[in-house]
Amino acid sequence: MTHANGLTSQWTPQAVETLTALTIKGKTRSEIADAIWEKYLIAFSPSAVIGKQHRLGLQNKRPPKTNKEKARSLLGEPKVHRWIDFDDPAWDEQTNAPLKLTLLELGDHQCHWPLNEKRDGQTLYCGQPNYDADVRYCYEHFRRK
Ligand SMILES: [Zn+2]
Image (cartoon, rainbow, N blue to C red; front, side):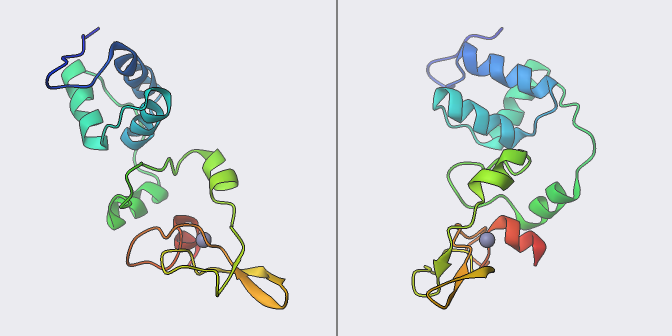
C-alpha cells in the first residue's frame, strides 16, 4: 500500500484501497473517479486514476469497449466537473428521470427531448442537463436520437 504524498498527491490510503478494489472489479476510470469522489470527496480525473493504476501496477481487466463507451469516446468526456457513471444501471433509472418541463420552463442547456406527456395542454420535455454544450439532448436521449 502506498502512502499519500501530501505535497504532490491527494491519494489517501483509503482512496488507493478503493481504486484497487474497483480496478480488480473491472470498473472504468470514470467510475472509479466517481466512486472516490462520492466516498471521500477527493476529485480525480480519469487520467489521474489511470496514472495511479499504472504506478500501482494495477491491470484493468475490463473487456473490450461496449458500444456505449465507444460512443462516449467519440464524443469526448462530458464537460462537467463530475464524471457521470453512465454504466451504472441506477443512473438510467434515477438520475436520468425526465424533469418534465414545458418549452417555456426549459433552459438552453436542458434536454429538448419531447415526452409523450402533457401538462395543461403543453408538451413536456425531458429537461435533464444537456450531454454536451453542442447537443440539445441529455446523454440518454442523445443516444436514442
Ligand atoms: Zn433527455
